[in-house]
Structures are given as C-alpha cells and as structure tokens.
Image (cartoon, rainbow, N blue to C red; front, side, top):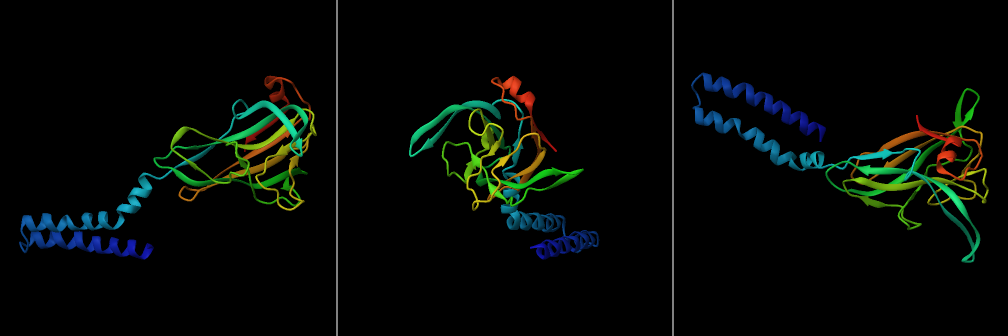
Length: 236
C-alpha cells in the first residue's frame, strides 16, 4: 500500500508539472486544462474514500481515573460458598473509566493489565509470575471480556480491584477476569509501592495505555473521605 501511495504522488507531480506547460504553449485549451486538473482529485477520492472515512469517523478511546466516586466508592461485599452467603461486609472498589471520544463505535474492546511492577531498591522490578491478563468490565456480567463502546462522555467503568473490611483486609485484591493457573499474583500488599499499566485493545480503535503508581497504609477507614487519605493511586 505504501508503494501505491508513492506511485500516485509521483504521477501527480508529473501531471501537475506538465499540464500547465502544455497550456502555456497553447497545446491545450482552458476547458481541457480544467478537465485534466480535475482528474487527479477525483481519482484520489475514488481510491481512498474508505481510508478517509475510517480516519474521519474513527473511534478515539481514553482512559480516565480519579480517586473519587464513581471511580472509587464503598459498596456492600459478600462471599459465597455453594450459593450461601458466608460473609456480609463492605469493600472499597477502584475502577478506571474508558471513554470513546471519537465519531463511531469502538468494537470488541477489552481491558488488560499489561505490566505489574513492585518497588525494589531505587527502582521497580516485575512482580514474580505476573502476566498480561484481562480486567473485568463493570457491566454486572462476570465473564464480559469484550464490549462495544459507543461515542459518549459517559463511557464504561472497569474494575481494577477492591479492599474488603473483613475479608483479608490488608490486601488490595486485583479484579482479573480470569486467573491464569494458580500462580498469577492476584493482590497487592500494604506499605509497598507498586506500578501497573492498563491497556485497552479494540478491533477498530488505536491501542491506548496508561500507567499508575499504587501504595496504601493497610488501614481501613469507614468513610470515603478518610479512606482516600490512606491510599494513593496516581498516574505516572
């Protein structure tokens, strides 16, 4: 395709250089000149109109996050064994929002944690056994890997993880869609600094990614205002 673009550019250059010369020498009339000069734009439009449409109407995805509702909020939390509630408590959920600011729908969108690092010395290193893994869209459907995002300022939330008041309360549990094997790290500890990257993949939108730094004290607070003083999640 690149070769075709170059060839068309060369033809256009030759075309627009020679045609005025022929006109100035009186070999073609004004009507012929206008007719000939209109050919190249028409050919370009005919050949590349689909490319122009895809470019002009392309979806444009954006990842948003703030340490405040609805990105971060307190909710009821339950654990189940054989469909019976074994624990009823509360949890703080933490989410990103993916927004489509383009002019058409973004199809088959999935969210992936592409990198997970832990502080080590003066830098960061990969968490042992961590892999790229899907996160959960906050649609109410537990196995929703792919969704369509229509152009809208509302967007769709996607879970990063949660902190439960009574269920392993010192851990930040990551909300993976699937757990790979039995070794995929599924939580972040307290009083430890982490960095992770989240990417959004789509069938027809450009891949986007955003990186965050995470750290929390391990202390539970009953109000969002106080809890968000104990935890830090910021873009890096």
